[in-house]
Image (cartoon, rainbow, N blue to C red):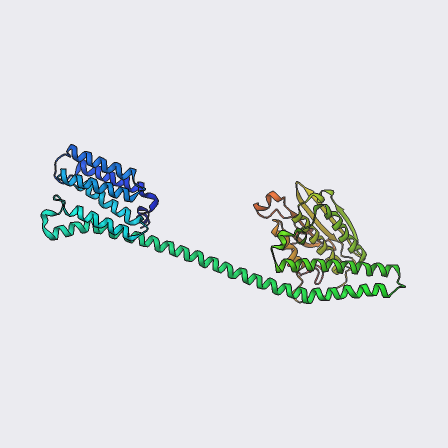
Length: 422
């Protein structure tokens, strides 16, 4: 029944008029009511009705007025008014379907009823019952069909509006729920995490000033702890600001990105921090990383910080690690590997940590895939961040399986080490 709904679609008015004219032409050529060939007057009024139907198909009131006038002329000069009667009835149907006010269709039906009631070739000679039946067919049926079509169309429009309103309401509720969740997380970060970090930074600062006779190496450690804590507080403040108002991330790019020219220095700082913890780190960072976009630059920095932290935690302070960052065809090739020597167990929360999970999520957002697994006696994490123009084409090819064909273990499993990576 889909074709029936399409037949009365507002956009297909011209198609309906063409079909109506073709059916009228077939009536004149093959099936006139009198059984005689059409007269010249009959052809003239029929052609006029056909032309009006085509030319005024977008103006139903004008079409109905013209068709009614042609029907009046046909009643006066013709014995067979079928063509003009059908034209006027169909024009009433079009007007009833498309008028915004139902009253317009009813007034038009009254006018057409008055005209059709005096048609001697149609109903007058059949008595009252025949006249009433003819008027019901010529006027009542088009009025009924037009009203049903218009009502169904209006009900469909109202249903669509309700669906849109419900969709907007659900989106509003989801946004409100997400805002509540962000606010709760921001409160926890501010009231718990940031408070304890600030307390540690304050105590380290006090210790630096109170303990005057410190070994220079101990003083360097205090300075590093103080600087690291201060940077962590700045990151926490930025994160809390973003959680409380996501629009801040768009107005202040420093909260979620890093200047490309500052990336090499930031990577160097992360390497120095790992070296200060006792890990021997070799860094091979291509100068081209200074030209990366801010989003991928931030991803490279966070991946490096997390990977080197894992080396310190799990491989031990006497381990050797290597950081490699290169840019090939605008794709970033990143890798951190260690030899695992001197590993010391580190307590991991039940169920494993979330470091690798967070790294994978960060990489996948940019269209890449993170590979992490054992490599010889150590551990290797690597990925390829695709070029910006190709991030919409899907995930980039994997950086390749670790040596020996070992598949990537689940986050927190630690590969060959107990509780190896978090």
